[in-house]
Length: 203
Image (cartoon, rainbow, N blue to C red; front, top):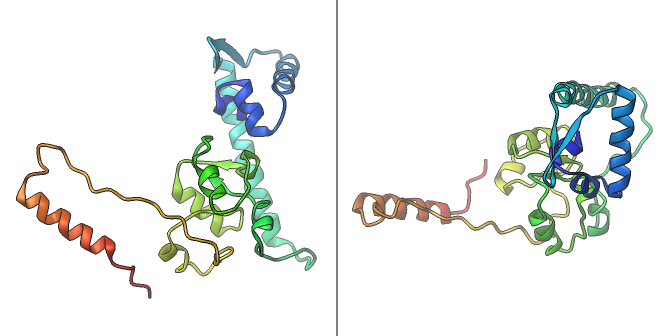
């Protein structure tokens, strides 16, 4: 599934922390076992064949079912063994699982600036849907980066290392260039800018 999402053996190898030939051999072995061709090479990229596309949907369903099973089993377990903690140091936090939006290094570089030495292996779940990330975080499956006012209102989550410097995200107000001289647009922009400067009201 990773190879299908990444679009190449080399990208899949980076995401999995494996050597490219290893990924290639695993795919070839799977194709031999199934007796079907899963990928075809188009230039430097990989594309799923019709058979590959059909099987991918089954694999995704199996993966989602396995995740639901794991979460359910964890919640139903009567055993009291096992640790319950949050990371207490940047070193421990760097070994935690984070949710990522894509396979670029932008988030990794931003978190490294805070002193967290992360790699792509620290982002086992990638989804561009922030609501999905947030729901997974509330289930205890990883660390999600959210606004303070959102996280602080949710009793099922906790801040990790609150002493860390917060991540500053720039924000722009934009409009079509032909409208930026409109007095009505200017008034709305000024109002929005003033409100956005105010600290959020909690409670």
